[in-house]
Amino acid sequence: MVGGESPLNTWFGLLPKAKENLTVAKRCVEAGQCNVAASRFYWASFLAVAWAVAGRGKGPESFERGAKTWNHTMVLHSLKVALPDPGDKEHRRNYVVLKGLREKADYAPDDVSKEELARVDFWVGALQARLGL
Image (tube, rainbow, N blue to C red; front, side, top):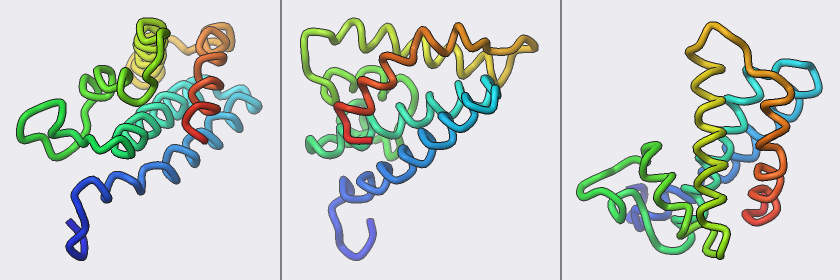
């Protein structure tokens, strides 16, 4: 907690980081750097969802008792709070696909392809529009 602020206020600083990651991801796509793009798209989404959930009055502790930071599972389960609409299952599916691409980009010997990125591009764009990235 900084300066007596609510713990939730500390999460509001995630939006600039989400925007920065999104900008880098787009530049990497243009440069043909699909591995870095996949990783940055994932982190942009992760940070944007955590930011949106904080804006609705919920922090990590709302999803896991005693939690002080966000983790991948919490963000996945908080999508219904960040993006409350009938497309909840689709949001979760796309987030899981994007997380898988990030893991492939960061840990697997094979590369993420432009075709794989294209599968999540629409969802990343929708997330960008819905959350103001």
